[in-house]
Amino acid sequence: MGCKELFLKKRTLYCDGSTLRFDEPMKAHTSLAIGGPAAVFARPENISRLREILLFAKEENVPVIYLGGGTNLLVADEPLDAVVISTGHFRGMEPVKKEKGKALLKVHAGEALKGLLSYCQKAGFSGLEGLSGIPGSTGGAIRGNSGSYGTEIKDLLIRVEILSIDGALRMLSKEEVGFRYRGTGLKGSDLILNGEFLLKEDDPERVKFKMNEYFALKRKTQPIEARSAGCVFKNPPEEFAGKLIEEAGLKGTRIGDIEVSGLHANFFINRGKGTARDFMDLMDKVSDKIFARTGITLEPEIRVIRNAVNR
Image (cartoon, one colour):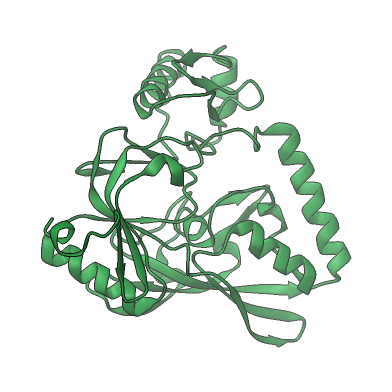
């Protein structure tokens, strides 16, 4: 790629505040603990450094992949010929304004959903309680239109700021984002920098009670403490993927160290040294069985990343 010979120093490149690593194992950055080495892994500290990395990737004609919390993500086992850019340094929340019992809250993409919910509880901001127990970053949740118990990100979001691959900043309304079930109309090359949420002011103790209720229910019905990527398949219209998989008798089905959860059948668990190949083979086995039984084609909810493919 040209950069190793010029800047490599103890396998870490320091570039005006940005830290880049070469051949960085992606399994260290995903909730599944799966993924081969990325050619370059970057954690820029600000927009200026981020633009420099994008320019470098463009000049070297190297694909760019954005990484939030590493959840809802399956990275292939083979080396990834790409620059993976983490939003880990883009954190924090800023109240924009309060009026008439409502609050506008700006949240940076790298902020963990858990941190956002904790902030809302202490500040007495209501609306996001149904997302309790969902892992990952706010940016990832926006891109995937995360939802649970009747709440979706799009219900509270007003606008987002994105950075395009050419380094241009744009502010988009909720309508321009093009939200859909577990997704948006944004390009894969668009990086979400922050989002603004319109929330209701409420008693902090009441917000806390609601969050605890949802979290307890999620903990009872989902393997939230296991190594997983969250829900593997999208729910088909008027159906639940987990219910279809359970009715097919596939709970506990295992390929290598990847297993269909016995608690929630739409979660696949890494029981040890599971690989992306095992995971994808299990996805194929489950989806084939469901199609044979019901005629329903299950669509992946998780994002699969491999060379020349990002789906």
